Image 1 (tube, rainbow, N blue to C red):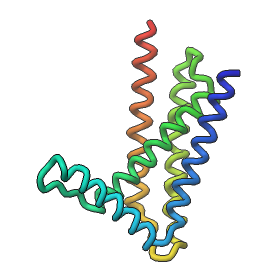
Image 2 (image 1 turned 30 degrees about the vertical axis):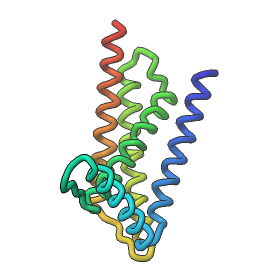
Image 3 (image 1 turned 120 degrees about the vertical axis):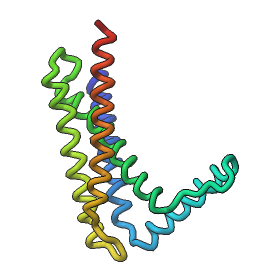
Length: 156
């Protein structure tokens, strides 16, 4: 029962996160740019209090957001597939399968995300953004896998 509840919660969180990602892609370029600008200004203002002359570019903030959005998506998808395939079993094949199903799913979401932008005013789909998104998903998937391995070794 507890496993089913966790599985449902993570599945819903994954779907909501995908809706959030694709919802951002549906925003016109002017709106998206304004949001990025506001976030960049707030980051610069916050860190500027502690570091004289601190400045971070809007471009860096946008690309970091891409990376982190898809790292979080991969994290949620790893849990989804782990619950579906049952990683608490002592099968490393199931563990690897769960994690390597999460990665192509995240990459597919990234491709759809950039494709959506092709049809939105003042937006462009970018292969470089798909690569940034995919690298965020890959890094998170690898970290997730390493944590599983460390937990397994710690239990022994």
